[in-house]
Length: 432
Ligand code: SER
Image (tube, rainbow, N blue to C red; front, side):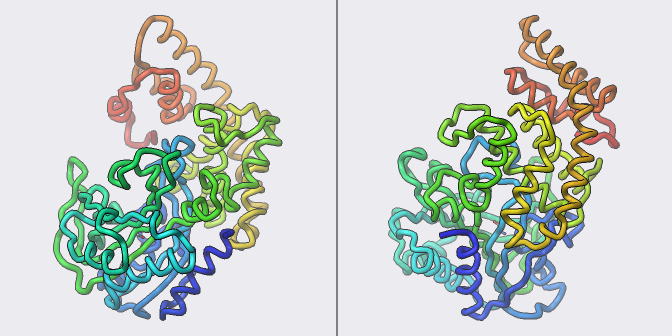
């Protein structure tokens, strides 16, 4: 099943069940505590909190999301993307767990035709009620696992609504990893859909990464997110999102520019990783630009600049000497423009901005890479195992070479970098 049909099957299912179809919010989040929109529920946060009365009790959407927490995993796992579309259904004080679980199971098995034998469920450790509901719809107890807060208690990562979640994973088979369910191997048992049972309010992140639960929300709610990349990967029987109809034309464009083949099956090939990083980032860059975000030094603008620089660097590594991002983002626009008209409207702007950013970064890259390679070679020849934080700083201060690229290159050469030390040396106006 191709992505347009996946989107419409999802949305039709929920609109037929009383959900209002709501367009995606912008990637520039309505909530100033977020740098970039990261979940379908973002635009509904005030409704979940009870700050504003909902205009309707049920909603469904396809939300554009960007998450950079997994940026280093791109190309190394088969399941991470920086930009992705999240299919969601929401209840604001209307239905709760029983209906949400029933809908998810019915849609996956009855409309997307996923085999029930391949579905595994995780529930929050003390959530007996969800486990009971999953058993009642037909999931055998041995395929229901309990996980702790790190996996099965969801929040936006900032103060706001939160609650336990129950996730549906799909068993991709022994070729993808170890047996034993999602608690053992999340690459083989890939999480498709997360159902969040919103009921509490979380506070600020504490030192150590945890957060306090401050109390109950005025009413419970449902917030779900089904990853379109992952569902398309499974339904189209391919290895990763790069080979689905959502992204497939882009590696083909990169093949032409680089004059070399993309070999998805070769997991150890560094070129494969570069193909996938460039493809992934180009999609995120096109969508961020189309939503009016511009590359810059801070906040959301820096999220974009970082993606642009990483993408160019991987393009150069593939041996592309001419423009990288203008043609690669153009292939994203051509492919996804029919589903997302804002891309088509922004096509020439995306071309202009990526051209400009690439010209300026190329100058930095050329100078910095020479110096960086020399510094790395010296450390290796001297028998050292690390690249000093001061080297990272000098490259940045004197040559504008971004610390995250230096750190990445050092890691690739087998050198460690004292990351906290680098960050402590950066003054507040610096952006790593
Ligand atoms: N908000 C949850 C998530 O992002 C479910 O949509 O995973």
